[in-house]
View (tube, rainbow, N blue to C red):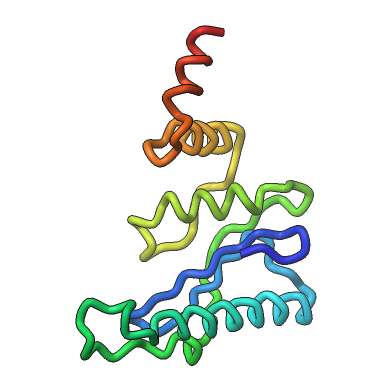
Length: 140
C-alpha cells in the first residue's frame, strides 16, 4: 500500500481474521499511523465487497469472511534507516518471504538485497519481457 511517499504492506489473514500491518518506517506521529490504518480499513472494506459476490466462490454456499470487520494488527518487525528510501524494497522483501510469514521480521536491506529483488523482478517468469531483457544484457 502507498500513502504520501511511503510504502507499507497489509496482509489479509482470512483464517485469523486480521489485517496485518507491516511497516518498515513506523511513524511516531499518531495521526500518520491512524491514516495508514484507515487506508487499510478502506481497502479491507472494498475487498470485503468483492468477496461477498457469489461469483467469487466456487462453492455458492460459502460464507464469505467479513474482511471489513477485521482489525489491523501491527507486526513486530525491523525498521529501515530513517534516511533511506527503502520502504518499497522492504515491501518486496516481505512479499518474497511469504513462505515464512510466521515471523515478519526480515534481515535489514542492503545493496545485495536491492540487486536480488531487481533481478527477480526483471528475470521472473511473470515478466513477459524477461527473455528479451536477458538477450539484450548478454549482447551488450
